[in-house]
Every structure is written in C-alpha cells, then in structure tokens.
Length: 152
Image (cartoon, rainbow, N blue to C red):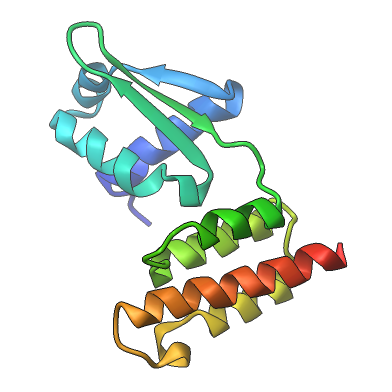
C-alpha cells in the first residue's frame, strides 16, 4: 500500500503529537521537507485535523508564523449534545460520522452503539432533502447522545 502525500504528512503530524500533546509547525518548513506547496499542508490540516476528529488548530501568519495543533479534550456525551443543539443548520453526514467515531474511540460509545448511530444518521435512513436532512440528523443524534449519557 503506497501512501499519498497527504497520508505521509498526516502520519508525520500524528507521530509528533504522540510524543507531545501539542505541537507548533512551521508550514513552510514542513512543505519544504515534503517537497510540496504550503497549501498542501493547509489541506491536510483542514481535512484531517478537525474538531470532529478530535483536534484543535490555530495559526499565526507572517514571518515566524506557526500552526499549532493539539488534541482536543475528551468530550462528554452531554456536552456534545449541547454543542450539536446549538448548530441551527444541523450536521452533515461526514462530520456526524467522524464525531460518532471519535466518541467510540474515546470510550464514550461502544462499537455497537456507534454502528447504530452511524446507520441512523445516514442520508438514506433520513430520506429528506437538504437542509432538513442535516437538521433532523442533528436532532436525532442529540436525542440519542442524551439517552446514552443518562445510561452511564
């Protein structure tokens, strides 16, 4: 199996995070190391180091600027439900499934619970047009997470 450039950059960042909980990257230096444009580093950070996947990023532009990446604190189901409830536009399928996977990986959901939630939040299961589908998905996810949080 060959790694794509984005996969290699992601692995590099994950390896650094495994050693230190927070890292500061020089975007230009990392791009030089991988022989790519700095925008490729931005792409990896924007698509693979998102809050839904359990990461927080911040950047400082200019000479000597950096991108700081750290793992987000492990969420509680009730807090996640409250954050979802605060999103009036709902949540799309991909971020919902990433959030469910993160909860599973953090031990907040069992594998079976996560699989059920992913099945229930698929666009085919909801069967509504956008934007109603994303709103209904968020409401269902909120209800399920609150029910599971009471159980624990």
